[in-house]
Image 1: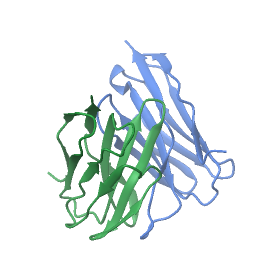
Image 2: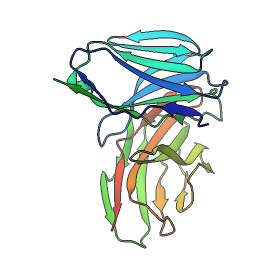
Image 3: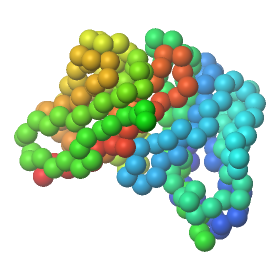
Length: 113
Length: 112
């Protein structure tokens, strides 16, 4: 079983739809959870950062972490064509000198006007 | 503005030649990382460094080499021993305490 599983899609939605992106993981020691957005031929950019379980909201984006189910989600409300990108989940066990992220393979999202 | 600069953006090399990809950061981050990204494969870790003059192999280090002589710089050399070097290469940095990685804009290497 891979440490982090992410459905690669592709996912295609109409403009204004609510988008749900998900990752599951197997390592119960993960504590830090992130979502990155990557436009074509660009480097990933950090979108959301959460610690432990719970929800975090930033504008149209909401990140949810359910550690009991080992499941994280990213919701995008009122999706826009500019949201079209690959979304990568990432997680880490801890900070400190051995800090290293484990990434999902990414989900390709297209928002159609 | 603080950030990570990767150069060049595009790089073409003949098979059998070594090539060095540049990565410079002015974020005062301690750790730096090199990833390779291929379609359908996600991000694969090549090398990482947590302090100057020290680095560790990642999951796919064979055919690559790095150095960390300065905190700001972490160049990657793709050697002729790398069997399939054509890929998109990403450099990243972070602080020890977490907070995610900051990525560069990437170098697309094509070997012909």
